[in-house]
Length: 199
Image (cartoon, rainbow, N blue to C red; front, side, top):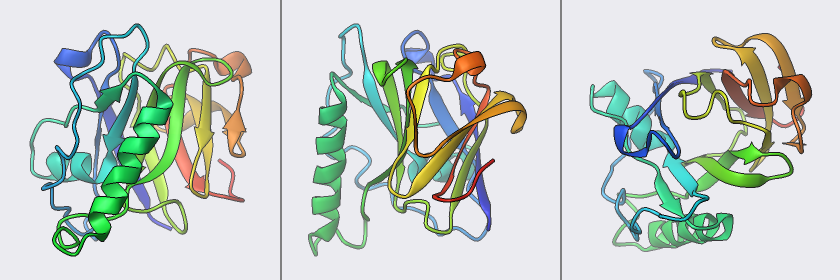
């Protein structure tokens, strides 16, 4: 099983609120057309809590091409994030756009507070975790002192690590952790893996 690795980097315009990701795409991965990157893109939320979504495929392609990481798309609620992903999936089914888009599948979500509270960041791509593992070897400074709960989605379980590079103490979420115990606000790296596998 191949791990899709990613390194968290902070996007300057969101440094105080959320932090972006810059995943590295494996050499065998197909390039992703970014034509739908701005589909229904809302204005950035100004609310105290932001619920953002990051397209792993577009971020991986940007990293491979040496471009800046894309900014996450932010909303006022998790429900708005889910509607955004659903709209993207419907657009992908449209024959005019099928070549440029694919299903938008959330693989996991991290939260700033326990019990799925506070701001969140949803990781999504064109596939779930069936036979695929998504790894983030270093979370951005906006998140590595902020994760208090997390969940795997779409057939993914999650493992949070206390150190970068998937090391140190860990917590497995199968698929959800309402709290992280000793790793609260100390998650430095993160993996979303197929259901039934542990870190």
